[in-house]
Image 1 (tube, rainbow, N blue to C red):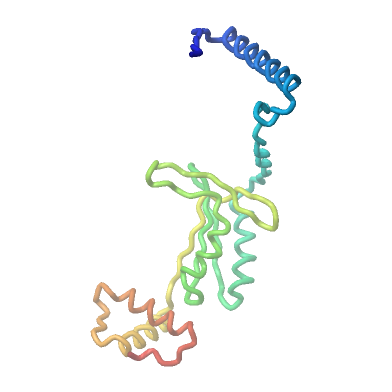
Image 2 (cartoon, rainbow, N blue to C red):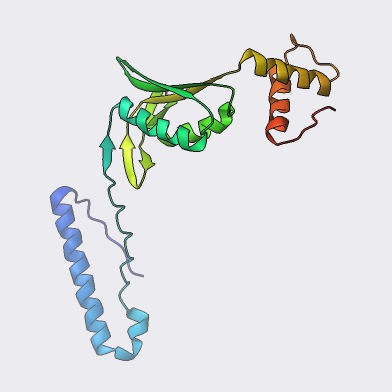
Length: 200
C-alpha cells in the first residue's frame, strides 16, 4: 500500500517544494499520456476552473448636500407638480442632511419612495454605525447628503375633513383614541383611491 509522507516545511521553502512537486506530477502525467494515448481520458490533467471576472469599480461622484437638494427638488416637482415642497439643507459636525417639508398633498409613504432614491447611506442600529453607499442618478453614482428625510403636515381644513370621514366610517371613532392615526390613514387611502363614499 502506498504511504504518504508529509514534510513539515513551511515558509518560502515550503512554497518552492510544492511548486517542484506540481512540476514533477505534471511531467509524469504528460509522459503517461504520450505512452498510453488510448487511456488519455482516464489520466487527463484536471482543467483549471474559470475564474469570474472582477466586478468593475464604479466611479462615485462626491457632492455637497445642496447639490443633492437640487436633484430632489427636480424630482418632487416632476412627481407631484401640484404640491409645494420646502427642501432645506443643514451642515453639522458629523455630516449633513436634506429635509423636505410639505403640507397635505401626497402621503409620507409616497414621498419617501422618491427620497429613498437619493440616500447616500443609512444608520445601522445593530452596530451603532453609519453605512455609506451611493445612489444612482441618470447613469452616474453619487454620494451626497448623509441624511435625507421628509415631514408632512396636515392643514386644519384637510385634517377636519379626514376626521369627519373617519367618524362616518368607524362607529367607535374617538379623536383621543390610540387608533386615531390609523383611522385617519385608512380614510385618506380610500379618499386618494377615488372612492367617493368611505362610510362603513
